[in-house]
Length: 148
Image 1 (spheres, one colour):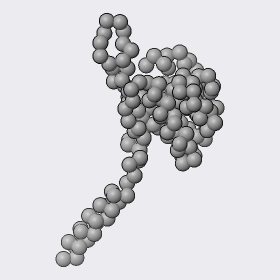
Image 2 (tube, helix red, strand yellow):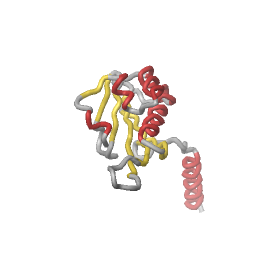
Image 3 (cartoon, one colour):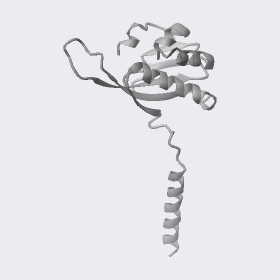
Image 4 (tube, rainbow, N blue to C red):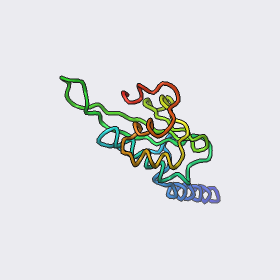
């Protein structure tokens, strides 16, 4: 009898914990924000998410925002669209912004000296990460960052 009661209590505890889960919790270390019409809009929304959550971002380590979009700018003669899933990484302590083209593989392109003001200016430019090239310091070779 006592064993059954413990099982019921454990089950109720698990239900309560599960109901406390926030919808905006990270999935596999990433915050999914949805699918967008194009890359620039998706990147701008991901950056806006960072700005909106800035005060609650972790003090150290990366915060990752994952987004999806269709690329309808295919080579001449091709029709349809190509589905993409990218992520923007942000390290608040080091002011580092990065983009990941192949999820779970790490960032391919990075920008340094990106603070809250810089993030807001990039969002306001409505150019996605292309705005980062004008408003932050790129690290390394960035030419292929916008061809993925």
